[in-house]
Image (tube, rainbow, N blue to C red; front, side, top):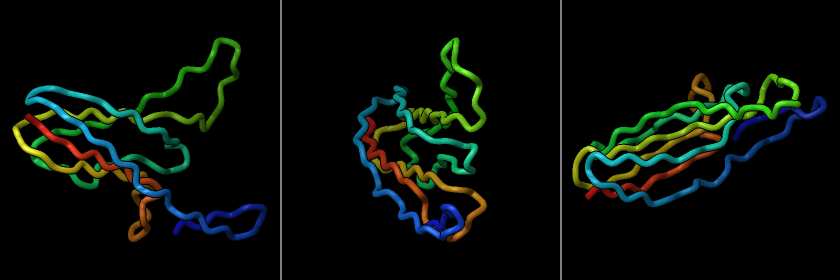
Length: 118
């Protein structure tokens, strides 16, 4: 469990339950999933497991402010996860949302993609 401070008091923050989704691809086809996050907190989406039937690429996508909206430091952004089928088969892509330097801590969020490539 993560520990946070709230007005000088220690607060335990439990990790969120894993989200799961199925994804079907053909060889050479790409699909993407968008995951919410905020890298200014130190948390990043990372690939923890990836089967050899796909290639996974991560890219940040900053939300553009509205014209009259002031610039804000720490504005949330999304991570776009592009998954491309490389050969026929199936497997699980495990994405974790954690602080890379906090070794031994469980991820704050987990997203599982059950991928089938035809």
